[in-house]
Image 1 (cartoon, rainbow, N blue to C red):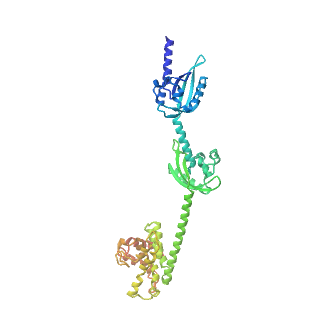
Image 2: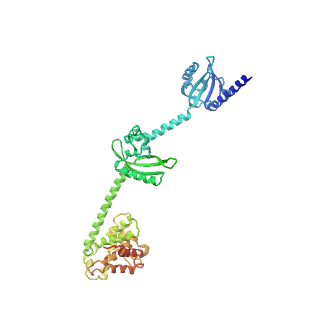
Image 3: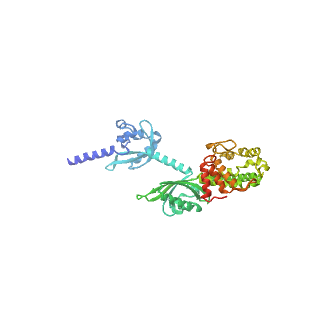
Amino acid sequence: MMMEKEESLEKIYFKSLFNNAPDSVALVDTDGYICDVNSYFETVFKVKRENIIGQSVIGSTIPVYFHERAIRTFDLILEGERGPFNDVLCVKHDQTTFPCRVSAIPIFSDSEIINAYIIFHDLTEEYERDRQLLYASAVVKESPVVLFRWKTTEGWPIVYVSENVSRWGYIPDYILAGEKSYLDLIYELDRQKVINQVKAHEEAEDEEYEMEYRVVTGDGQIIWVDERTSVFRDDYGKPVYYQGTVADVTARKNAEIALSNNLENVRRAWNQTIEVMALTSEMKDPFSVGHQKRVASLSRAIGEELGLEKEIVDNLEKAALVHDIGKVEIPSELLNKPGPLTDVEFKLVQTHSEVGFIILSRIELPWPLAEIVYQHHERMDGSGYPRGLKGDKILLASRIIGVADIVEAMASHRPYRPSLGIDVALEEIEKLKGTALDLDVVNVCIKLFKEKGFSF
C-alpha cells in the first residue's frame, strides 16, 4: 500500500515538473510520434494538446527545410545521445517560425530506449538581445564618442574603454592592461588644468560636469576633446569611479580658434582705424591735440564707474576717440581763431556733429557709433544741438561724452583763452547737473576727480 502511494506521489511530482517546465517539452516514442506535451508547449506552438498527440515531432514542429537535419538528430537520440543538438527554426501552428535550441533526454527501461523528452528552448529573446548588442557594438565602433570608465585614484587608472578608442590610434586591450592611465592620455600642458577642474568639481560635490582639453593620440597627434562625466560614489558618498563620454571636437575647436583670431585681427584693424581718424581730426586743429584721447579716457572711467559692461565701455571709448571727426570739414582758421566767433562762424563749427555722423554712418557696426557722435552736444533739457533732443532720447554714451567733453575743454588751453582749471570745470558741470547734464553721469565724474584720484 505504501509502495503504491509513493509511486502515485512520484507520478504527481513528474507530472507537475513536466507541465511547469520553463521550456516546451514533448514526450515522444521511439518512432518520433508525440505522446504528450506540456502546457508551455501548447502556449509557444499555439496548438492544443489533443491536436498534436500522435503527430510526428519532426513534421509538426520543424519546417521541411530542416527535416533531414532533424531526422539525423532523432537518430542520435535513439542511440542514447542527449543534446543540445541544433539551433533551428521551429514552426508554430499558425505557420510562423521562431529560433529554437533542440535538446533531448532519452528514457530507458532495462537499457532500452522506450521514450524521449524533446525540449525546445525558445531563443527569440536571446537572438533579439544578441541583435541589439551587435547593433550597439556597431554604433559604438562608428561613433566619434569614446566611452571611458576610470578610477578616482592617482593617475585615474582606466577600467573600461569602448572599442572605438582605436580611432585615436590605441588598442583597447593595451589601455585596459594598465599601459595607459586616463591622465596619461591628456596632453601634458593641459594636465594640471584638468586636475584642478576635477578637484573643483569634487569640492562642489558635482554629480556631472563637462570640460574641454587636449589629448595625445597613439600616433602622437594632439586633438581637442569634450568630456562629459558622471561621478559614481560608494555607500559613504566618496567618489570611486568617473564614467563619461569623450568626443573629438578638434574641427570645431580649430574653427573657434580661427574665428577668434580673425575677430582679433578685425578688432586690431578697427582700433587702428579709430586712431587714424582721431589723428586726422587733431591734425586739423593742433590746439586740441590730445583732446579726444583725454575725453575718451574720462568717458571710459565714467562708464566703468557706472558699472557698464566691458564691451559697452570699449565702444564708448572708441566713440569718444572720434567724437570730433566732423571738424575735418571746418575751416582751420575758425578752429584756431584766437578771438570769439561770430554767430555765423559758431553755427558753422556746430555742424561738426552732423558731419561726423555722415562720415561714420558709412561704417556698418553692431552698435550706434555714428549716432553717439551725432548726439554728443545734445543736452538733457533740449538746449543742445543739432536736433535739440531731450532726456532719454539722448544715448547714455552721448551723455557721458558730453560731460567729459566739457570738463576736458574747460581744463585745457584754447586759442581764445587759457585753461580755466579742473576745479572750475567741475563747478560748471555741478551747476548743470539735473538740467542740461545727466545727474548720475555728473556725480560719477566729480567722484572720479575728488575721491578716486582721476586726472588727465
